[in-house]
Image (cartoon, rainbow, N blue to C red; front, side, top):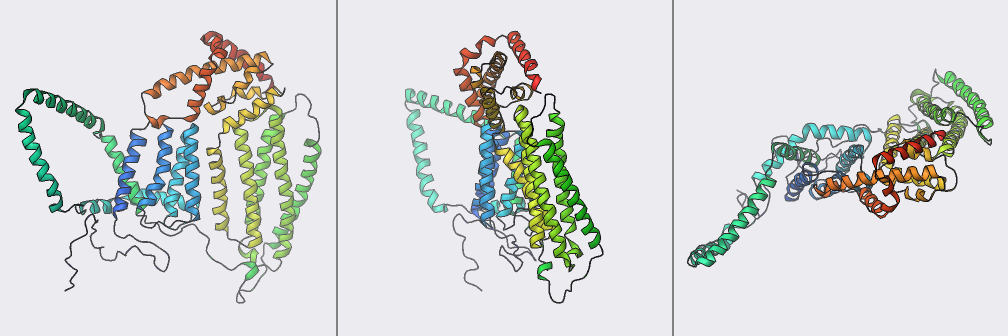
Length: 550
């Protein structure tokens, strides 16, 4: 028999039952897959950290600062406890995105930021297994984690039950027995002196009160216990993922430019139809671009020009045309068409149409600039600019696919990355602050039209921080309207501050804090509108006045 078969475990080690029949150890196999291995002490500590972090930021949390801590701390715990820990460029990029999102949540969070953060944490866990965070695979990874988290939870519970004492019995007895003797004899000595016994009794009573209050404060309720189970479940899925190979990924294939000798080229039946289609859209786009440049470029628009129809709705329709062109090019250059010997001629037509599409994209940006020049910036115009940019990037990806004979799955993965990046950029930008800083500069320069965006749209605390310079505006209606608006937000900010005084650090918002300090310093400017009736009257006059630029 092996001499080491009955050796004692090392102090502090975590024991794991032998894997059941058919279960493999945690080593990469020939396909690059990772399978479950023994549970380690760092992994168990990370699971406990997940429970504590979720409890502090969700159950005992009150706002977005807590969620920022969750999204920033979660990846650190994953790094500490992950059995795989395959750090690479993908993990670094996703980790940086999570830190940026956490900063945005601390600044001025929104509910939909939580969905973005959840996807990013899932993507980070995915990168530690060596997988690339393609959007479809991230969604599948999240679903598998939710469904199979029980497997990881079971392994963690079994590991907890097999933890050996970190200190040998003989060692802790050296401390416990003397301490017990001192406590016993000390109690007798204290009881022999009434005054000291009374003082010690008061100390013990105070300590008991503190301990009982702490027990009551931290004794888990049923919802909190369910949260602990949920956090452990999700941690089990993240640390012990069952999805360890890419699902929605492009597979290697022969390209049209590098076909094998045993894969002959042949003529595609659809080639004439596709060629004629490209010629037709080239002619159509050329005619339309001439019309576009004649009607909307280098001209002064008359009073009453239909800005919304041409510059707003029109830009949306042209963006749709770009998206349709992207889909059409992707559909044309795939399948048997790539094996047609006449493919180079089809590509030349595609390059001609691509140039026209890029000119059309320029026209869309121009239409958006017309609308922005008309009456300023808004959140939705920011969304529009990001959306147009995402469509243009998607179109460039299609051109890359055609030029380098990439697969359709390759294209879809990167198109989804493009969309996700646009959403992320919008999530982390202080949109309202940027939007209204631009509007304020326009107004103070003498262009009063952007004032309508301040009167008709909701503005978060970051956006309000950009408005105080308008207190010096020469236009009385705008100046008094902004003064009344600041009075309204000052009173709301004070109410929020009182509510957060009863909460904890998880409800902190930097934009709210900065705004309250700024408005307290401007009390003399807005206090004239502390009366609700006068404030509402000033706001009504401002809205009616600014509506002429709507």
